[in-house]
Image 1 (cartoon, one colour):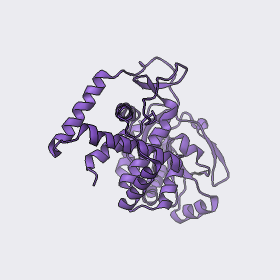
Image 2 (cartoon, one colour):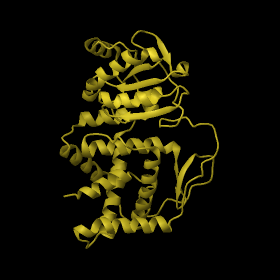
Image 3 (spheres, rainbow, N blue to C red):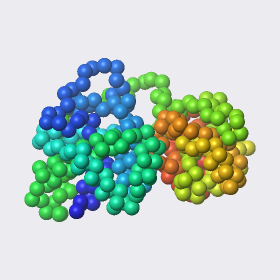
Image 4 (cartoon, one colour):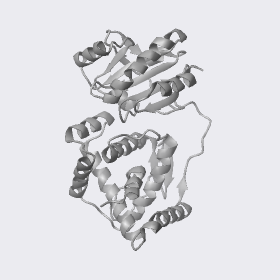
Length: 330
């Protein structure tokens, strides 16, 4: 039986950027890659960041049935660095895991969380991953877990395990070559996180009007990603509608972006709930992928300058939504 804190560790650390072979991945060649961090010469890049975030959130969904709501970019990068330290150590120790082992682990997690294959496929499609991505994730996570149990925690009592692991990690952080590029004065980056410029998109609405985010510059915008099958989305819709009714005269733009569904299904849902703000159709999920939507509902608050002010993952109660709107409108 797995120890709870170790499962949380593997979940939080996620998968390694290096492959778990008999040798640590060699340092990558210098280039024009947007490096977030470097661990013993292995670069952790922004181009891989979206996939890593999606995998961490999918692992959370497998382990708990829900996604994580408090992962900032800096937090994920810090965990990524620690993950790389563990993965490099596991690789040096020759710890390997097969695809079959990873597949069995995925099935075990589904059973324990009382989730089914249909839900897994839906979650993978939502975040733009394949089952093979998840299998490779689990291979690496299991290899790290095996290394930790065999090499770091062997013979440790229950009360010693956490401190022994923390001591090892602190030592590794002190001896490894870890580099993070210094922040440089530059235009605001475009991205799907607070402080970045919100990625522009253009989608057709249920009313057959195409709407483009760039055209709303100068106005505060609430973008709610949802789907008809999502229970929490349905529960928070009255609060979203109330926000539209109460603040539209202050210039607030509210868009509901349905993810991955057809017009007929969405139209019936909108009529049932009497939603009166614009509903946009992200039928191919390209916009939700651009915004790193790892679970539904996800709400993005874009300020008048076009920058993302906040991102709320999961169901919002009316009080929480009011606090987000106060920050956005003020």
